[in-house]
Length: 176
Image (cartoon, one colour):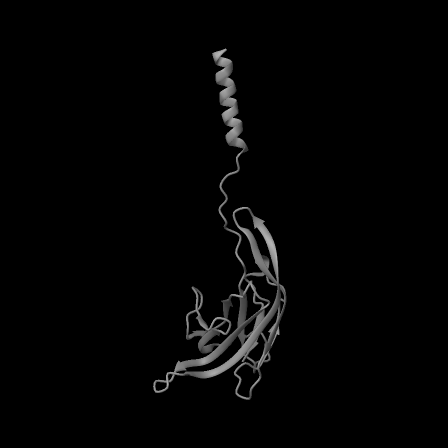
């Protein structure tokens, strides 16, 4: 009888632990960034990157300077950058400032400022129990305030839907 109880106990423990799911670690789930490439507006070949000197990106929504692991404030960008879009709104606005500097006398921003608004719909996608939901952006569109001193000449949207599968491709081309 003891052998039967011991065997049943062992079988119960094995079944109990084998029915548990392993701890999930989220490696594939993250809300994608908007990838923007900078191109030469004067070149007939629309695949030629053009460096933006001393680029600063300021978020208008929360009046903060954007920088990340892949982009430093007032750095020269030779090809592309990644910027976040807001999940709690359908519009994110940024000032893109070329040749950014601070005037020593007035402490005001110098450089050429272009204001861009990115408009989109926010969608959610369930990834896994560990990752939960990630945000995707659909029907991306952009508008900009046009002035005679703009450094951005035109904008082309290559991917209007931004999701994890397209997170490493350029979504928007900025020609300058």
